[in-house]
Length: 447
Image (cartoon, rainbow, N blue to C red; front, side):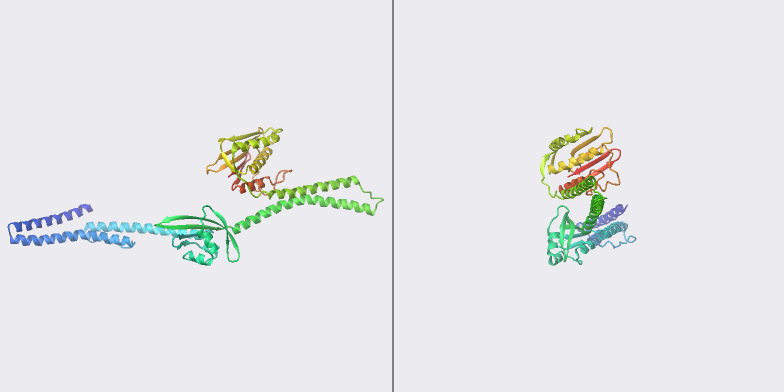
């Protein structure tokens, strides 16, 4: 309807101009003074009227575009005055302004919401312009971690802490890296990751900094508590009977020395007691040697080996252990050409340890079965798995099985799984355990 009104008004003015020009043409052709003068006057009026009619619409649009240019969306265009088509045009302008204001308000709310979240997280975050060094945004956690006041350009850091500047802003960390930063009078252990992104023809760098000093200290403290608890238990188990037996033997000897005639020394009892002390002492020495062996593995020598060759070696090594046991050991390898980049000797040790544990877990089940498999996971990483159909691992101890010297076996040293975990950590991988009392346990080695 608006366009019809505009078209009708424009058509009337064009027709008026056309008629005036026809009258003017007749005035010139006849010639007729009245027609000439009248045609000229009406033509000028028609041209001026048409000019103003068209210009007014362009001026209104120009005003609107000017407000958009300067992002002035608060302007309100009058909707109840002027021609109908101009009123409708003003309504359209106001609707656009209202919509943009709503979007801007929503975006502002989201920005404030995101800003509050980033301020609350205990992770330092900073974004800055790569070319100029101007800081786009930095949260309080970053300033607190680095002990900095608020700054607008990273040159502030360069002048005061050049080593921190080089590590944070000059070094690119493609993956999350653990870094030690030298502060004024201390060092700080942090995790750093960063990325570069483009925005409006400018490059920005986003750096995420996490203080892991307290977490490492807390975890280390908890690990020491568990370790000392287990070690104390094992040592006391050995020392208590040695002390008690030594006191008994000493008492018997003292009685014999005081009354050699009545209190004769039983050499057989003495020999049995000393033999028990010897065995207990040897057990304690074995415990100490076991602890030393846990700390011997400090690096790996990776080579590329076929999974099929690895399985063949393990199969040969496990034959003596399987001779007297009715356990089916299955090696499941879908891709015989699967390659693994590992320290084969250490991983053989891990797999043998896991298979032996699986054999113990299947002693009380019918048709015991242990499956060793290798494949590539959904994340593209190689995986080795040892699965059994045994009794599984009790839920209350599953979190303790990697603690050194923790063992549920009477003859176990308690370092097997601890050593396995250490070897996997040296490979840059991890070890995971899933257990179900009905279907057994599965240990995954993820590289």
